[in-house]
Length: 234
Length: 307
Image 1 (cartoon, rainbow over the protein chains, first blue to last red):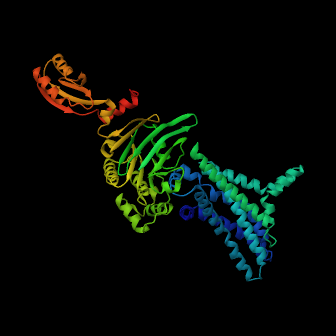
Image 2: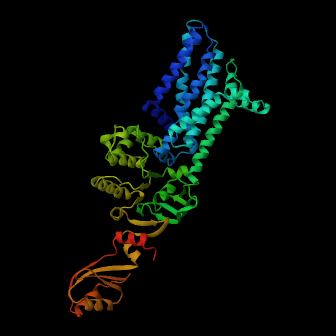
Image 3: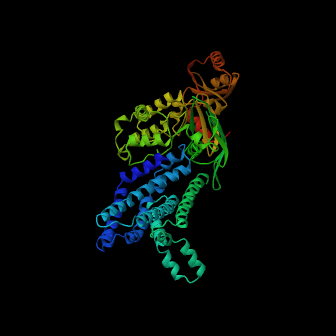
């Protein structure tokens, strides 16, 4: 598994993708940090995180788009699938590779926090739980987008569908408010990433929300394994 | 050792493989021969665990690829038709990745160097794979298959797209590896199979049409042997004399003085032919024994049905 994680990370940085994702993430987070913290004289980074949700929805598909689709197109999946590793190890390796790049993106928040320390001490509990929420939400989103990448041979199609799915998830609350049937609205709120993420911004670790993101990630990684396994038999 | 038992593979309604069974012993180079689309790659993909079979089993040194895939896969080095190369990596990094992927327990640096030496790619070790020529890429793929010294090698058309010198190099390599490994090697180039393999399994339309040692394949297909003769004398006399020899099945006249005699297997008719023609006063100018060439067997099997 570690071989695949290493290979994934090196592929991000052998091509421009890793650098571009980092650059875009750092640029926007830096801009929001400047706008919402430095300009507004506050140590609360909550608005920075909330504004970054949209950027994350758009960047994660770029991280995951080639994971499986490019392997299939270039036939390199034959090397992975005939190696003495299980499908689960292979999928987990891909997932962790993408997740580590995502963590590298989010590491920038710690730098912002250190900058804030020079002015006033930030509320560390709030900051760290929000960061945790950000990572968990990212993990769930990466798993979903990896699943999209398993389904197609074209990275462009994978990216477009993943971005579509990401935007849909982002707008789920607004969509929910348009529907007047109560149980549908409730159901949509229950699976809303936004709602679950908001549980983290108050400095508490909300166990149901942690479980929600972890289960979403687990379910979609499991589906990846199933799709790969089924392909061998059809 | 590789045992393939009653493999059947369906794609939708199409039977790509139909009840295929054969065995490759340790230290044997087995040629899988067949026209394009016959099912060679499908067979190899099932043996290596890339595809599942509709029914049947594959045992690698007694380990079932479906029941204990990790254990079985660890014994196999596979070179698919299109080498699975990551274009953005250097040769050395790629081989190190394959080394890690296969969880090989050997000194890493030394082993990678050794394998690169064997397939002669040490000179491109630090070049990015996408900049390499087809011949080099093929050999990098080969190196990937050799990583970890697996006892079983499955090579899917390893010489396609190489220049004649490289082809000869690869053939020599396969022959030398064949002493220690079990190798299954597919090709649609007949001379190659004849040059490299101890045994040939011929596949057509997903079925095995022949399975025998390379030298006797022609005899097996024909159900006997063939003698090519050059004889002086009137064709009727020669035909009569030859036809009377015990064991001769058929005599055909070629161009000029050339005749071809087909005879039953297990009989040596050469002496009989000599005395018969001497008696008929028709001197033999040349006599050459030999079965059907591989090409002829191949055409007969793949075009003429199974009779």
